[in-house]
Image 1 (cartoon, rainbow, N blue to C red):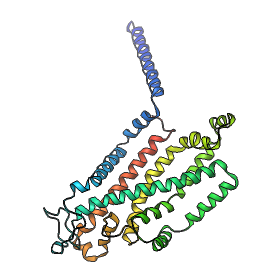
Image 2: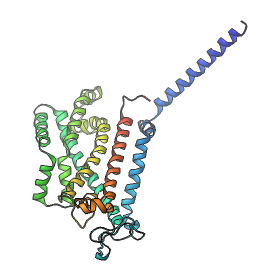
Image 3: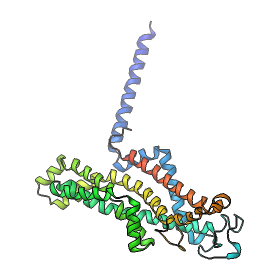
Image 4: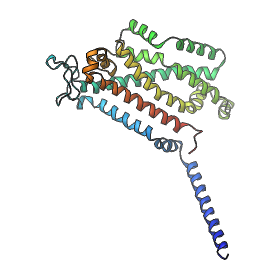
Length: 312
């Protein structure tokens, strides 16, 4: 019986200490910058971190291709055509005797560059049109969104084939085709964000002090809409890499002898290659699969880390 008051006091002391600790944690979270909060959330996602590491490795290998590739990617040698992997050619040779590993490394530079530049083009168009539609609304919104619906209604490959036939298949035109046909999702996303943000108090305050429309759009609304745009851009890069592979496989994208993962997959058209020459198509196919999967993992991690509704 005598020990009960002491036990009660001990429990009260423990509760006070816990409350103090909780208050300290809350104050620490309030002091942390948005960038630090984002990094803490992002690094908790192990799959996103793994995807980031894999992407960095692939990008580094592609950038360093001129120094680490064992052979010139365009040097042909008919005597060594279609040779299986060996010490001299770790991933074998193709139908013209070119080293597959060297072409794989150089091809990564092309495929990833197409993804980055095409996404930059689509973001520029999508953000511009989405911002105008969401901010001005009315007839501006109607015209832009109906034009967006028209672009969406056409199948990608039909338009891509038509444009490639007119402009000619090459690296530059592949980037233009993918960029011009991939902005619709971004435009809709930006429009929705603008419709929501333009009604908030700080935007009304900016109107009240006489801020110009350009300043309100690019200094007050757009920065607060960037989180979903960043996620969309990341996932759009994965789609761009796949689109490049589609077009190059069909002969409408990057052309030989310039290597890309897409045109290296053309070897899979041969039944002989599918059955007996796996080194001609498995490496580029695996590279595309790993790259797209890693980008999607990073995109999922960014979405979770940038979500303001997510509680720590």
